[in-house]
Image (cartoon, rainbow, N blue to C red; front, side, top):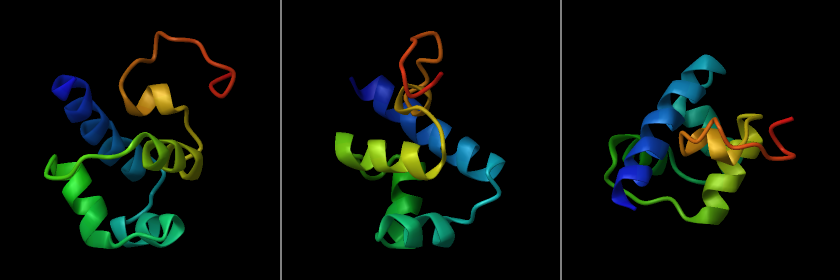
Length: 78
């Protein structure tokens, strides 16, 4: 749902900053533009499932965490 997309975008910014990465550094790691990362974080672009999974991998977190569903258990999280 749209609410979950907004949560992803919110958590993306928080987790990226926790990892001390700039938008430019994350964009480089994902082979996308800094502008795209900025759009995702501001809620002006939608992330596909595949890009969400790539973001989670690059940030060394679980994709569920990006969506704000910390209570779910998954093999990637543990």
